[in-house]
Length: 168
Image (cartoon, rainbow, N blue to C red; front, side, top):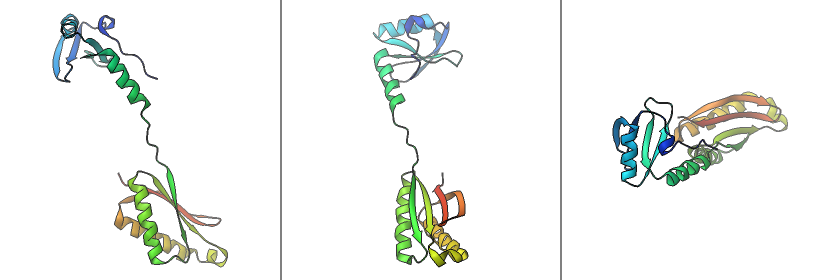
């Protein structure tokens, strides 16, 4: 949750930096002058920040200000999801292009992409060729969208994996 801001006579500073209802900065004035300006417009004086000297106060309707704070607090934070792209040892160039465009879509949405190259049976013996396939895929992806490697190419039990994300 959030801490409720101080309003009107709860504000204890002698000097305040005033912002009017249209978000125009008035300047540093006494608290009494700021309260009178707020009451003249039938609005409240709300302390926006406490940490600055003098504190910043705004002429606004207290209920609307609280509602905006609650809405801002509840807004969903986008967490990046890890999406998977699975390649195979004998993947055709066209299929690799399609997977690269799919990975590009994921990266544009802000997700990370886990690239898996699955190896079966005798394919596990040809690790160097598998690494080349992944590097070819990264080249294709690099031409579509700039990306950075979050987790280096790693040999695992059933093949190779790596995680890439969009470059900031």
